[in-house]
Image (tube, rainbow, N blue to C red; front, side):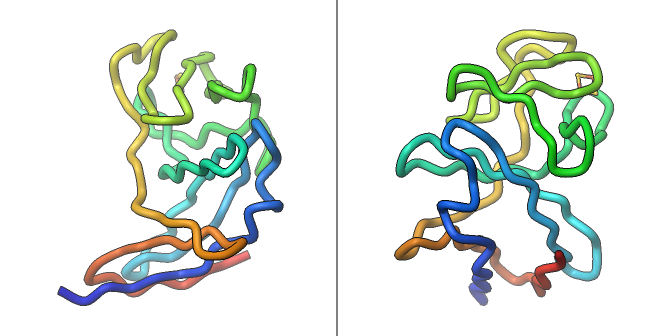
Length: 122
Ligand code: FES
């Protein structure tokens, strides 16, 4: 198994209690991601709502988060928990955002993918 890692951004580029859009290309396909942060904890997901497979942001890179715990989809207000991506309210309750393996290394958020070619864009 070949491990590929990609330094995505500094932790302080993700707003406390908020979210940041990240653009990547994996195996030649654009993969928009979203990272949420609460203190030293960061979670990384594909920026794709399980309801209609569209990005969660209102405008590119503009997200609505609630009480440092939930991110809301711009389209039909589904609410997802930071820590596990579970939809706890809205039209796709019980569904989850697709998590992306990551780790914190120093002050950076690092994406982990196996057997993938990753290119960071933007
Ligand atoms: S597309 Fe996200 S809640 Fe409908």
